[in-house]
Amino acid sequence: MDYDAAAFAERGAVLFPAVLDAEAVAALAGDFDPVLAGGRPGRRLTGGRWAGLLHDGPLGRIAAAIIGDSAQPVRVILFDKTPETNWGVAWHQDRTIAVRQRKETKGFGTWSVKDGIVHVEPPIDILDGMVTLRLYLDDCGDDNGPLKLVLGSHQLGVIPADRAAGLAEVLPVQVCTAKAGDVWACATPILHASEAASKPGRRRVLQVDYAAVNLPEDLEWRGVNEGDSPNAAGEV
Image (cartoon, rainbow, N blue to C red; front, top):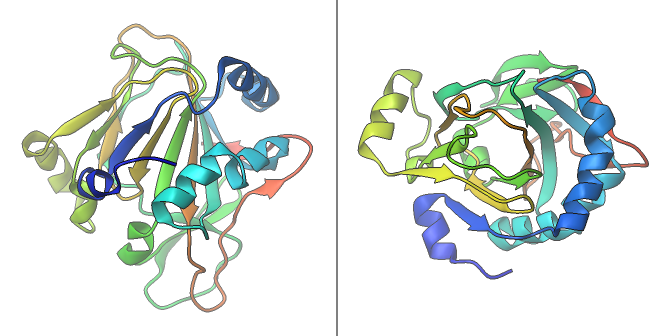
């Protein structure tokens, strides 16, 4: 998988165009139709027949190129921005991971349960070794509430919430427009945000976090199961 590793290390983001063709995107979107029934803005997923795409398929190969051959998908969220679910989020870092069960472990804290899945905030070095991939199932232009990234912010460690907006004013910002089938890869702890779409249309994105190391002691990644049908853990 060809990409500029040095540029990614500095910026924290890179676009992989046309990872899936139109036929593959349509098939994947069809798999997710039952999961998105009811007009919910997003769902956490725990597995399905599509999971091979994340392990040995093109997304898995991208993750392996960036963080190593041991890369494994550890959390999946399917977003569905529509005219009825047209949201925006302020600048923030994703600082929690999904694990199988709560095990008190040094350096891990702020435990929570989201949609039946146990989450915890790990030490920053765990997040620094991860990568997040966003596969677009629809085109996303400037007017459809695209993801925005503060380039280089992944190098700054844990960023207090009251500093996030200020960093977005002084560091370069990448607006992640994309075509269906494209994948944006970003360092997991990078600062990011999105605005509500000015011209709302459908914007489905499959977001997958990858890690390449085991967690310490008895903690285990929640991971992603391969199976015959989509499995949704609940609403985001």
